[in-house]
Amino acid sequence: MAVKFLTEEWAQTMTEALNSSDEFKQAASGQQVTLQQVVTDAPDGEVKYYFKLDGGQAQVGLGEAADAEATITQNYETAVAIVKQELNAQNAFMQGKLKISGNMMKLMQLQGVFNAMPKAAEGIEVEY
Image 1 (tube, helix red, strand yellow):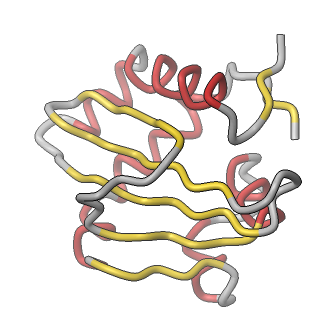
Image 2: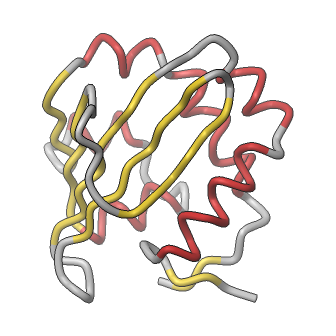
């Protein structure tokens, strides 16, 4: 059954998928971060969600994270392309489709985590 992108159900499903992936947990081991994501022009308006990593456990949730170390902003089309793996986040950044404010060094240290995310989430059927 498909989950609608950028909903509570999607966030919960992503959290479960990441935390049940051995590859993701290995990449996330010892890492700690809170990232704020902002998706502009989504079908229901701007959507904010966060990604937290602490002690190898991930949490994805809708809303704002007061303690975010970085904020990543992109439009809906870019967010969908990145999740579908049609667009690499680094390429999106270089093309100006993804804007980052905050601790860039922290994001660079998390490349292994970001690289493990698509495989962990590949079994999730998402409705866009």
